[in-house]
Length: 398
Ligand SMILES: *Cc1c(COP(=O)(O)O)cnc(C)c1O
Image (cartoon, rainbow, N blue to C red; front, top):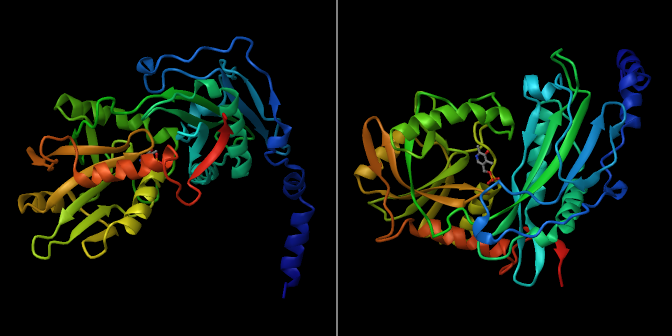
């Protein structure tokens, strides 16, 4: 039963500006798409000239949002500079979030996206956290599909080649007052990319980092906000001065392992008494970015690794455990996971003046599971195998 007081509050809400605003807020609508085609379509660059994130396709997608009006007309138009008021809140208070996903040219000449629903869900979570507008995921997937279709001649062909998709949202309110943005711009740009490892895996050396913290409980390390990335470059340079390519981010007095660089981290241990192997990654406790690759690896590992030989665990584990188990010969392999590289093998971890050696297969640059996982995922991405609805067709070139 509603009390008299709450009825009063409800009717006040229904009569309020906010309610009227929410009624008149237009949802993101892909059927309103307007396409302005480039007059000079570019020729695809030869595959060997593709540098990650340096080349872009001919078109971009932009959609403006305004409080009280909602989402405006989606536009696909020639790739060009943006024109923004220098007071725009993105420049002052970091109202920015992004996504990273890929489209693939399959053997049967279709173009597919890998689990785009996961990226859209995550993008909406990032937006909600910094008071930028949310949107209907399926509508944005459709629009991205149209953008890719428009530049389909620029989706590279070949093993490990793909189109990197960068959806981005910024707050564009032009006031220096710190407040909820009442204007935003969602845009998507695409970049043809080659394999992360052109000549096969190259295992990396990490520095276990406890002098800087990437993410903390109650923070925003589990969101893809631009503000999370700039502060991580200096520690990376410091590690590089000591000969390590990436940071292995530790957290708290226990020195829990959280992530590696901008990837999720996986370790494989083998119990020397029982012989049972364990695949471990940190739990999603708010300090870990919810990687789509991480989720895909856990799902496939739980299904494909023999439970008599394997345990798959999302649990806390520390650099001390890794150090002790390496000393006992119980550390089997370790790798990072993310969209750009899928998996990235680890060969060494610097910690307190010691280098912990991570085993690799003899004469190779990765462990066995790292290799298997890379193949499992590539087979689904390039359409050699279908799994659930992980691959979504956005263009058929036949
Ligand atoms: C993007 C990202 C990942 C990997 O996420 P994927 O969805 O697998 O690409 C992991 N950690 C951080 C910090 C990231 O930004």
